[in-house]
Length: 109
Image 1 (spheres, helix red, strand yellow):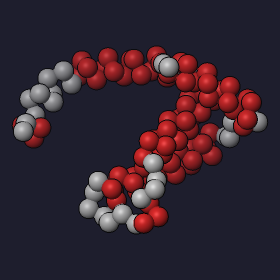
Image 2 (cartoon, rainbow, N blue to C red; image 1 turned 180 degrees about the vertical axis):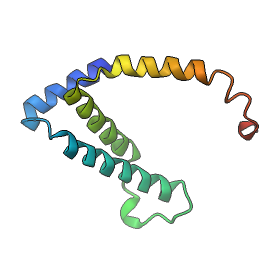
Image 3 (cartoon, rainbow, N blue to C red; image 1 turned 180 degrees about the horizontal axis):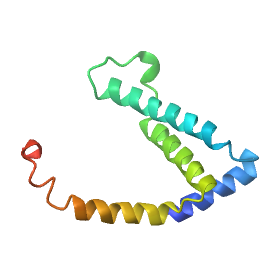
């Protein structure tokens, strides 16, 4: 599924199950909350913090999917075409960073 299809699926879900979109500020707060949950898993599972027993069953993929879902909600309700925006951003980064990372001695093994 491409981003356009994902936006359509989320909109269909909202119309069928969600009644309506939460307002933009509520969705922004939810996005922040979901990113925090991803950060907690990463910090404890891959970082130096110890992982609490209650965190061991958390699924990183599900939490990342929550971030994507809420980001898509924000895009839908603000009229952003994510397919177009992502393509434009990838083209920009490809032009800007074409040699940047290959020439970064910090990334050499």
